[in-house]
Structure formats: C-alpha cells, structure tokens
Image 1 (cartoon, rainbow, N blue to C red):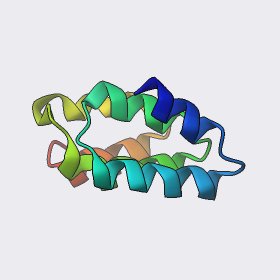
Image 2 (image 1 turned 90 degrees about the vertical axis):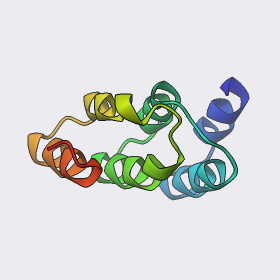
Image 3 (image 1 turned 60 degrees about the horizontal axis):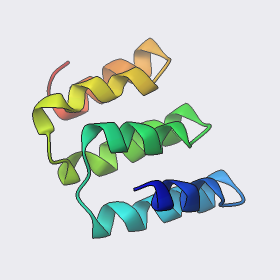
Amino acid sequence: FYTLAWDVNSQQNENDKINRLSQIIFNNCLTTAQTMKFATLLGNENTRLDFLKGAAGRIFDVNNYSQAVQVLNSQLIQQNFLSYIGTG
C-alpha cells in the first residue's frame, strides 16, 4: 500500500494522480482506510469525491465506507457522497 501511495503522490499533477488511482482501483480491492488515505493525496475536493465514488464498488469493508466522508470538507459534497453510497 505505501508503495502505491508514494507512486500516486509522485505524479506531477492532479490528473495524473487520478489516472494512477483509477488503475489501482481497477486492479485492487481496498479498505476504507486505504481509500481515505489515497483521497487525501488529491488536492481538489470534487476530484476526491469522484475518486471515492469510483472506489465504492471495490471496498472490502463496505459497512465502514461512510467514514470516508471525513476526507471531504464541503457539507454539500459530503451529502453528495453519503447519498451516493446510500447512507445520506
């Protein structure tokens, strides 16, 4: 996991980071904690939201996934995420 996080963080820009994260999601299942850590590597909150939505189907501990709302700052975006995963 740490190697993947370092790889994402070393990408030059937000678009490259999200592309790398998309590859990681496609090839791996993640925990909520791992997904939250990856999301914090993204500077744009809307990009974080898109990443969290994209990762939702690849989460081991789905009952904990609502905790990922903690990496989102805007109340509107938080509500959007919770509605997307069915807890808001």
